[in-house]
Image (tube, rainbow, N blue to C red; front, top):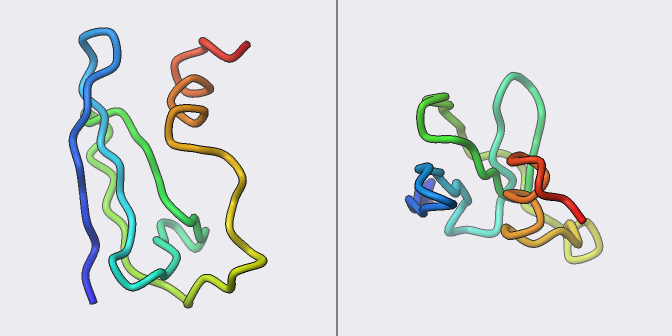
Amino acid sequence: MAIIQEHFDVNGRDFIRTYSDENRYVVRDGEQYSEACDPAEFGRIYTEGDIIESDDVDEATAEEIVDILTGEEE
């Protein structure tokens, strides 16, 4: 089991998508997320948590999360 991190660019800004390759939540500061998308400069570190049950999967996509973080939400 492993945490996967993928870098991607939004309008010239570096972001990191963090998720588990074992369908587990990623955990930071006691909060569990199905995946996390953070500006790279934040340097956030996640650990793996509980298994994500199929009815617990968030409906937001990575793109929607980035839009919210960058204030480009429609």
